[in-house]
Image 1 (cartoon, one colour):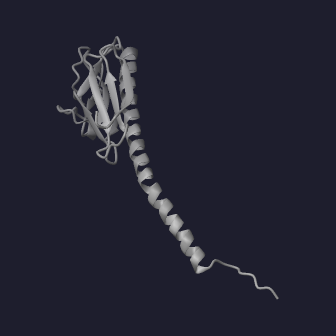
Image 2 (cartoon, rainbow, N blue to C red):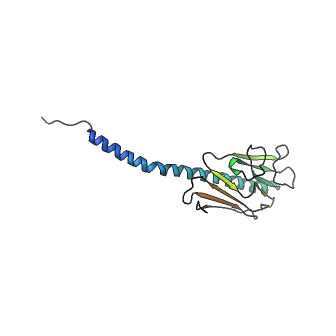
Image 3 (cartoon, helix red, strand yellow):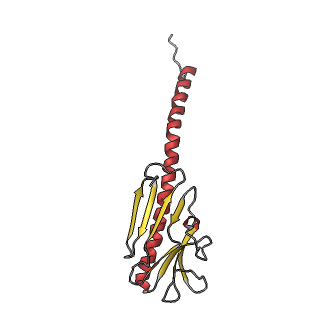
Length: 173
């Protein structure tokens, strides 16, 4: 009578576990980088949404609409601390000015600080769109993670004509 085996031998099990361990060791850093890049891209998309909302609302309402860095969702920061969040708002006065006064101005939407280890910097604390859709100044925003690798950094530029240009850039640039 012939005997059949119904399981794995200890050697076969150890080989399978070794292969699984090697594959996991290779995949884990790649997955972490993928997660970081996804967070950076999500933050960039949120900024693009805020800027497009502000420009379209300024055209629709025929009044200035601004987007500014905000740590509490109620006031604009005087520094370029975009990493703590931002708000889009319409100015109560037609003259605008770019400063959010929660008593007089109308909040359109607020965005909380991006989660994880995403850094957002800008060369100005706010951008204002005029009723014509043009911006009062050019602003450059960058989004990246502290452990940025390759082209994991994102750049957003709003021109004075109101154009928005988003692109991937090298982390060391």
